[in-house]
Amino acid sequence: MANNDILSQFSSADIREFRKDFVQMIKVGAEIDRCYGESQQNLDNIIPKFERLTEQFNKKYGGIKIKIRKAIDSFKVRLLLKAEGIKEFFAGSASRIPGLKSVGARNFNQVQVSNGEKFANFLDSLTDRIYLSYTDAESGTSAIAVIFDNKEKMVELLYEPNEVANENSAGFRLCAFYALKESYNKDIEIYGDASTFGFYNLLDETEKREWYDKLNPRFLE
Image (cartoon, rainbow, N blue to C red):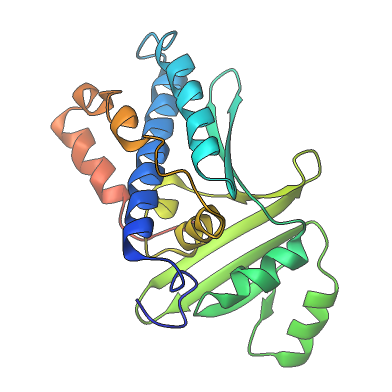
């Protein structure tokens, strides 16, 4: 891992443990959402179990919080990061990820970072959200959108499951950074419990291939 990487201050073992826990939670959440929207399976037992595991995840990692949002046809896993505002989030983490190309206040690619004057003016005007695009020779391209949640007093990362599960993406790096920058409880088991949901048994071979294909780096095409 490069010395200027946002995760370089953490041990490889800690990053691996977070990745295992986090990616499994994202996968299970995405599969619950798929079944929830298509009414393919009785989720009466699965959802409470996942909610309990979410509570454990939040206890294990103090700098990141998973919240569940249930609607009539969707089950969304929200990702909240412990930053007190958008300006603090950008200065303390997002700006430190290599390859920042452009930013925006309401959509992507409004201001190119290479335009120093416009970029500086944009940073001064930051309020409740930011859209960021990255292009890096080693990590490829990625994009993230972040809004400030006034109720939680944290920033929420708006994401695609396949993108944030990719460890090279800006979204994953940000989640790992906030999860690990404070001490975490290594005694709490997440990955093993999250692996017991058995969703892959519900997928046929075509669906399995589609799922693994989704883990390739791409976002907001």
